[in-house]
Each structure stands twice: as C-alpha cells, then as structure tokens.
Image 1 (cartoon, one colour):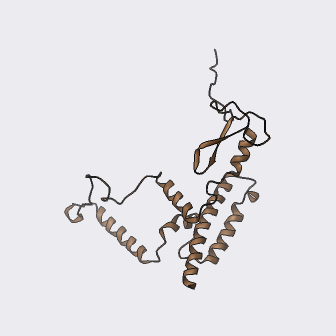
Image 2 (tube, one colour):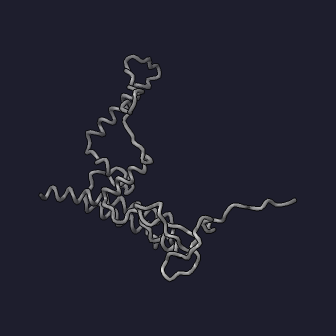
Length: 203
C-alpha cells in the first residue's frame, strides 16, 4: 500500500514568495527566505532575512516601543473589539434600533425579571462604591489589584509578580515570559495614572 506523501510545508521552510536575494542583515550573504515587518507603522513593508537573523529580529521586536501608556491602552481596547465600533443596546446606527421592553407589560411566572431587578440593584450598590476608571479595569485585573490602590502598594505588588513570572525563575518558560510582558504593560498604565493623580493633588 502506497503512503501518501506529505506536501504540507514544514514550520521553518522559507517563504515560497521570498525574493532571490541575500539577507538584509549587513555582512550576511545567506539567502533571504523569511520576512519581518519594518516597523509598527509599516506592517506591510518587510525586511528579508535568513532564518538565523529573522529569529534575532523577532526576539528584539517590541510593537509597543516608544508608545505612551495612553496609546498602549487605546491599542489594547481596540484589539478587544477587533477594531470595530461598539454601542449600547438600543443606541446602534440605522433605522433598526431596538428598545428595551417595559417589564410591567410582561408576564413573568418564573420571576426572571425579579432576578434582573435584583441584579440591577447589586450593580447600583457597586456603582456607589469607589468607581474604577474605565481604562484601569483590565490592567488592575491583570495585576490582581483592588481599587483604590496607592502607588506604593502597586509597586510592591508588581515587584512580587515580576519575580514570580521572570523567565530566570521559570526555566525560560515562554508562557511565563508572555505573562510578564502583560504585567509590565498593565503596571505601566496603572503607575502613569497614579502618578498623574499625585501630581494633581500636589498642585
């Protein structure tokens, strides 16, 4: 019985559309078979490297390099909704807007709406408590911090997380390294907000 030949490309095979030229790394004469984006603003323009140098380039790549905490937060929020606009129920564009029904006009033998009313009451109580700034909700969740929090407490908690997830203490675990990157971004956003608050109070 003949075995079917596997025609799928291997993970590290060169790009079949790679140009016939040498690696873009200075002084490298190896064939360029792997592409990498030139910059955050030019993701469709590429350098062409050999396998060794594309690995080096990717290891140093930092999409958020040079961005402010506010710009990083804007990118993170846009990624959550795949860069698509969102709106509250009943407030969408177009003629097909939907409105919430009147609860008093609906039969509710299973007390479903009663449960909804209790849920709204719980939300109202939560809103009466110290309100978390919208742009800090995700970073605080990543850091495992409650609101409000002081800058000193945030720094202490961040140092503990950084030690816990540092690659040196996790035998180079890539998952721990990715977790540490998210922790660093989250702490940058929280720290910038708390420092701004302190400056405003001092002023």
